[in-house]
Image: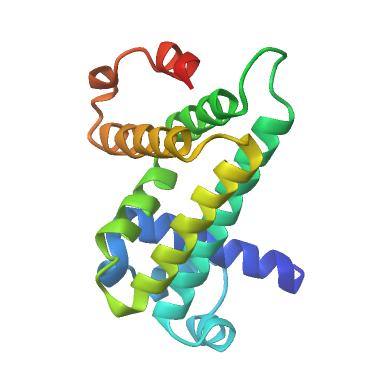
Amino acid sequence: MSADDRREAILQAAILEYGRTGMHATSTEVIAERAGISQPYLFRLFGTKADLIAAAIEHHTDGLRAVFRDAAANRPEGMSPLAAMGVAYLSLLQDDPNDLRCQLHTWAAASDPAIKDVAQRTYRAVWDEVADVSGASPDEVRRFMSYGMLLTVLGALDLPDLFGDPLQILEEL
């Protein structure tokens, strides 16, 4: 396994564990085992657990931003970039509940000094990406992001029916 592949495996394992258990209950031992490496090697690569979690959050956010860029660039004719990004986000929430859990844990831990900076930076990066890729107005971006936040919470609570018909709402975007 190449160093890049090993790093990717570690970050994916960290996202999974962090999404399951949050910042303080996440076990570096479990992450290392899941990634097929030793715990000392994990610390050699990332330094501290907080640094590993921050890297996992950034990696997760980079992936989300890439999904949004791809959705906007490859949207069906007649669909707005925001609607295409919304459809892509709905797919993420349905396909991988750890995506939403990773986000929820990040926002919940944002008061922790080890997480606050990366939480703010990555959320702003998503916000800016949505604005740049869509060309939407600040109010449209704010509405898109608020719908996304609501979908994330309702998905985590397994109450998506409270949102209404997401496709109809996406047409408003």
